[in-house]
Structures are given as structure tokens and as C-alpha cells.
Length: 510
Image 1 (tube, one colour):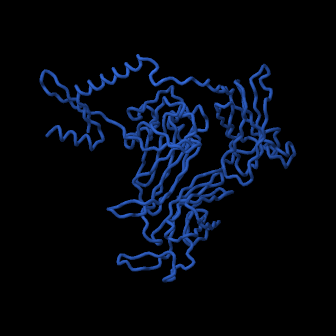
Image 2 (tube, rainbow, N blue to C red):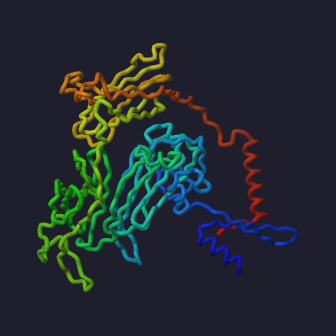
């Protein structure tokens, strides 16, 4: 009885029990060994290029409360047992991107088919290949009015060839409720070494989301889910989930409010109308750009041309008595308040573009150049590649990059290809078409007598980068499954030993 009670307790506490039974001096003995164990990994992994599913990369998943002490202090000594990091494990780059996917899916509830909301958090591996190869997992943090949720995913660190590829990761959020506001962050592991460093925006990717209707029966009950993320200093991207097609809601309108939301809409500053495409897509997207410093909020709702017209309205629902009625609105949701703020101490002449590189095995270097704030108008760049020679600063190749005028991406990409085994350095510089032209130059700083032009700006260089080109291996001649009688016999002997061992010992687990 006591043994059964112990097993039940351990099972409820998610503690594994191993029962080892053996024969000793004609006595049948069983010993229980109990130990804390992580949960099976629920993170889905895909190759970004092919879209193929990757199995067995994620080994374990640690959930709150086990990962909360680390989240609170970013002290590596507080990581869950089984996920250890030393001071020698340097931080790796943050994920290259973070996104969210809204989906309305069929679900069986008490034998009945129902439409329910599913939300998936998606992110991609770091841009830099060295960081990808040394990624030991990811930390996902979600904070809402109920508290903090964390998930820590542990990878098989021995699979460096697989980790070196560009991968995409997907996690399904559990325990959803309607109208939850959730702040999401994702860190690559190893993460920053202390709490202060972990709070810098360059060490994680983040977005905010507001959940809509969890289950959907009628148009009047449907509310879209929303997510917002900054794509530039003065621009924000908004993603929203589509309604089920059977609800026949096809026109959406989004309102941008300056300051806090006002029902009178006196502080409404921008509108966007959106027509759902005739496709299988589950979500749409729009952006608000060139915003001034202020606080903002976004409202979204369905456009019903027959609003509250009985028998014609699109936003209809049924009462508890199953009586039909027109709702006063539908498809309504409101984003979190977000703030646009500029660093007023930063001027174009002192701005340095964020720069990162990734070395490809094919003898190439990808260069990612961060875009400048829109207010600076620094959109043209000269990208030089230096090759290690006795003359260290001789230019080997030069490329030019111009940010597209309609770009909403935070960075641009150029590539140097057909490189040999050697060391290289990348140097980036802003191109100022009005260089040294007083009153017109883009590269200006504040002087004692007002603005003055700088000779050059936006100059940044990498360290020396080693490029090693993979040489294709010579094809090997095929051989028989067993190359020698010794290998064949060894296989038989090992199999026999395993069979004998399983016959002598009994293992069980609960």
C-alpha cells in the first residue's frame, strides 16, 4: 500500500520511478529509484530551406516553475539540473527572427467538432553560423496578467552539423484564454551571463500578442488575435488572425490611436482598410510607419455594411434561448499600449550600423547591415571586403547596398561569394551624396555653432574572419553489408548477449 501511494505521489509530481528487480539467493527483490526528470520536448524543428521536419535535436523541455529561478536572476547556477552552463560557455547571438502564427483548427470536444484558436510562436536560429553551431537550446518567456511562463529547450550539442544549418522552431502556446495580453521573449542558449546584460534589447527577440476568441460559434462572438512588434525605430508591424471562412466576414478596419484609447475616437490618427484574400491563409498583416514619439494603441474590427439591420447584419449571434439577434460590433480587439521613443542624443554623424556576418561552407560570407532610423535618411552603403595580405588594408572586393524605399525590414543583406581559404575583414561605410555640402550633408553632427558636416559616417568593421572552403569528398567504393566474417560474427554475439541479459533482469517504470 505504501509503495502504491509513493508511486502515485511521484507520478503527480512528474518524478520518474525506476523499478529494478533481480533474483538474489532465491529471493525476489525490487528496489525503487526516484529521480526528477524533464518533460519530453514539444518544440518542433524544421530546416528553413527545405521545410523538412528535424527529429531528435531537442532532447528535453523544462517548464515553470523549474526554469523560473533562472529567468528571475539570469544566474547560471539556478538553471534546472540537467541543463548546466559554465562561465566558459560564451553567449551566442539571439534568434534572427521571431513571429507568431494564428490558426483556427478543428477540435473534438465531448465527441463534437468545434473550431478553436491555436497560437504558435515561431523563431529562427541565429544569423551567424558559429552561433548556430554553439546553440545549446532556447529560452521562451511569456508574461501576462496571470504571471510568468517559461520553457527551456535543451538540444543535442553533439549535432553541430545540423545546428549549423538555418533552422526554424515552432512552439504551441498552451492554456489559452480570451483577451490575454502576452509579452513574449526568446533567448538563445547560452544567454547573457547576468541580469543586466539580459535586459539589453540586442540579446533577445520580442513581440506582444493579444488573444482573441478561443472558440467560435457565430460571427458576433468572433474576436481576432493580434500581435505587434517593432520593425524599425518608428514603425510597427501588426498581424491578426482571420475568421473562419464560414462566418462570411471579409472586411477589416484597423485604427491607430495616439495616446490611450478613447471611445470617442478624438485621438484617431490613421486608418487602414483590409479585405481578406480568397486563399487558405490564416492571418493577415499591415504596418504603421513614420510614427512620431508618443504612446499608441491599435483597434481592429469588422466592417459590417448592414450593422444592426435585422435579417441582413453580418455580425449576428444567438442568445441563450438560441434566438437570433444583431450584435453591435464583431471582430473587435485592442492591442497593448506601445511607445515610440527616439534617442535624441544620437545624430546621423555618430550612428553606427548594426553589422553581423555569417560564413558559409561553400566559400561565401553573408553580411547583414542594419538599417538606420528613418529620420536620418542614411540608405546607401559601401561594403568592402579586405583579404589578409602583407598590405592589411588592401580592398579585395567591393559591393554597394541601397535600402529599398518601401522596405520595412530592419536590415539588408549582401553576399561575397567564390572566396578561397583565407582570412577576410568586412568594412561598411555610409555613402553621403552631399558629402561636406553644408546644409545638405547627411553625415552631420552638432557643433558649438550648430550642425557641421563630417567627412564620413556609419563606418564599422569586423574582426578578421576565417573562411575554410569544404572540398567535396572522393566517392567511396561500395562494400558488402558485412565487410568481413569477424564483423558478422560480432553482430551475432552482441545480439545474443543482449537477449540473455534481458532474460535475466526485469525492468519496469511508471
